[in-house]
Amino acid sequence: MGEKPKLKVTLITGRTIEQGVGKEYGKSSKEYAESVSICFMDPEDMKKLGVKDGVNIQVSTAFGSVVVKAKKSLRAPHPGVIFIPYGPWANVIVDPETHGIGMPSFKGIPATVEPAPDKPVLGLEELLKTQFRKG
Amino acid sequence: MSVVRAVTCPVCGSLCDDIELTIENNRIVKVKNGCAMCEAKFLGYCCEHRVLKPMIRKNGELVKTTLKEAIRRAAEILAEANYPVLYGWSNTSCEAISVGLELAEEVGGVIDNTSVVCHGPSILSIQDVGIPSCTLGQIRHRADLIVYWGSNPWSAHPRHIERYTAFSEGRFEKSAWRSYVTKIKALIGRKKIQSAVKRLILKKPPTFPSQIESKPISSIAREGRKLIVIDVRRTKSAEMADYFVQVEPGKDYELLQAFRALIRDQELEVDRVAGVPVEYLEEVADAMVNCDFGALFFGLGLTMSGAKLRNIDAALSLVRDLNMRTKFIIMPMRGHFNVTGANTVFTWQTGYPYAVDFSLGYPRYNPGETSVVDVLLRGESDAALVVASDPVSNFPRKAAEHLVKNPLVVIDPHMNVTAQMADVLIPSAFVGIEAEGTAYRMDHVPIPLKKVVNPPRGILPDEEILRRILAEIRKIKRKKAEAS
Picture 1 (spheres, chains in turn green, blue):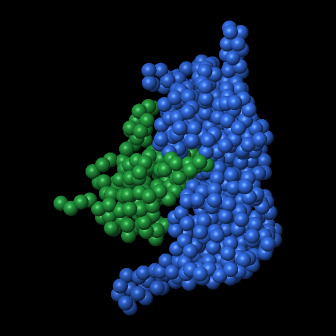
Picture 2 (tube, chains in turn cyan, orange):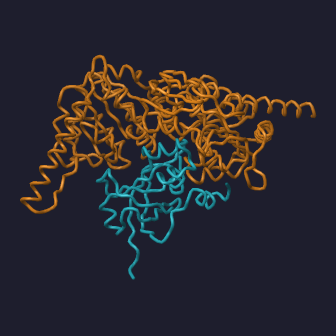
Picture 3 (cartoon, helix red, strand yellow):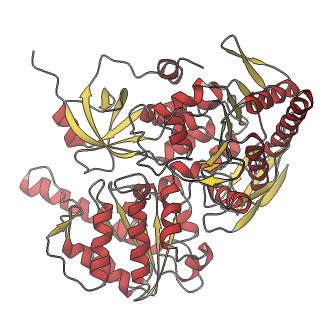
């Protein structure tokens, strides 16, 4: 068996209206978790990686690794750029470095994506337990 | 059943103040004029995720307690700490923030607001360069060119375009809504025809060239209000724009400097800047120079990526340069409804807008050192108070890790992610729904927030909870002083 395909990309985190609505309903709501544990990818990148809409993928950076659901981006084309809405899932992999000005790097982080159909997307509670061992 | 008019929406920095709420039996049953986030907040604020009783962590579990006990425990944690962090403040009233600052001075901690992870770099640049700005009313009535850079108002400030910029009906500038609808209809029609022709004649699937590769659309040259969006992705806001420039991630600084050169009529000796052909940039630069009143709104696409504060330096300088040729203003798209208020109140009381350190007894400001993410990354704080915010959801994991490791006091109406990690959790009333107060819109206009329903029994506003904690801390300190 050959090695699993991996794709080098640039990670952008940001707002979506679904995340905005979810956070107002409550951070422990299903709406919120579903709106932020996803990753929007360019359809061409998805083809290269052999993943389909709704399949789990593992996104890794120098700062961590997280499993989220791949979604076909409606904002394509943006080859080589993936988008994860702000939230606890994105925070696992963003760059904490503030470069001496107080602001971590939430956008433009080098990342790799690989298919992870066998790994589950953790729920909020499980994610917090694995990350912080509290709550 | 009663209808309350002219309610201010406590969600984003646009602070829309034309919301109509229908109240039935102390519950909001209908929201008129609001966006999706506004509706979600007003209709969903009292849902199952609401915290109704104060809680304290015992043996690793959060258990219910009395308000008095929770306040006493919170005061103990803060009074005993050497270097506590007091964070949040952007989702509460100016009155509560004012008490928070007093509290920070009393306990000698670091107090910071959420602008540190949104427009902190903008503030640093504004302090360096200065900012030519105005109120949103002026833009609504007079601006004929709107630029959104690294900002997606359709998602983050859904009514911004409709109320203040391209689609608002101003006194001197008319709404561009009708021409947008015509453009969309024409586009859909053209796509349908192209697709039909290709399928019937060529018998192969239709392909469409991307915006960058296609010719500049003629609407850039038309009369009336124009909308330009510059972003790394073709966002929904970008689809509404007359002109969309897709910049490569992290290359905004280059693009800003290229625009600065172009508006000074300098020639660029390259074909592309940040992935965009220079001829298109020339079109945009022409539109900028030839407008009567331009407005550049920038979002976190500039502050969070690449050169961060230097991006803002370049954007402010671009607008300064543009003012040599025409009238142009610039404004950050502030996220939380009172983040501008937090900066304002911080500045009144300490002299600095965020990242203020009281550990030496007087306010010190040095973002990068006294900013909360840096304090947490260095592992220096030994307790925290979080008010109306959710840093565990919004901070990088490493920073959040240190925050939850130490005693954590949370004041919030909802069981958010940080609240789940709290050692003391005090529920509060929603400012702008169950408590009144003042908030500052993104253009620094203060707007009153209304109390439209009563909070659940026993739930106090943030301001009152903070006052009680402050009184309790002073009591503990007095006792200590008397004992020694």
